[in-house]
Length: 226
View 1: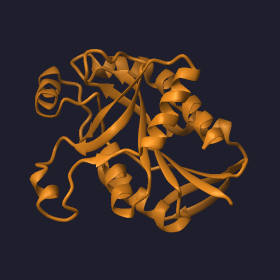
View 2: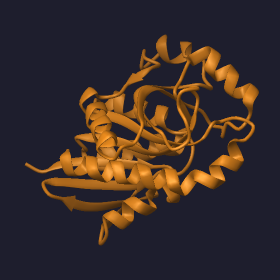
View 3: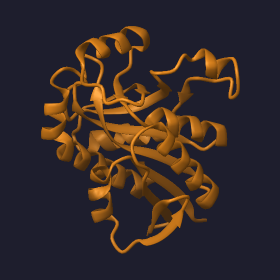
């Protein structure tokens, strides 16, 4: 039976190496997004560039789910490090995802009555095993998302003190929330491109492509074993 896995990246740079590894794709357009389709063994792979920030990510994820009924979704890309043990080019696999720029009261006390979205245990295990195969240092922990690129040490400290995340990005929480509401297994795999501090913009420019390539290698290997 054919399985389907969705891979969502926010920026073209996060999809470049995935597209190189999955050439000759069929392209289907839905909701303003180009969904690239390939087959790897018995797995159909749907990979898509969502655009940056939570609304883009949520719309893209819902359209992917409605159209292709994936068995799992991976949010693949780069992120800022938020734990002192996590360094540039390490990988963080989400244990759970949540927004850092919204009072969780609005999600916990109103629909969907949940503000923290757990990642799928089997996807976490597969991601960790794959990182270890590549000799990449991997952490499993909370990833938080907001509609800002965190490059300010004071802002980083505020987020750390409130939520103790391992990484920060702009999409994982939205993809995770959408997957949760649709009961689709989900995990975010993020390679650290910067430390989300005052030096973050400079580090991002230097390590963006390296980090994106690392995640692409990991995700493509995960697809082979899915």
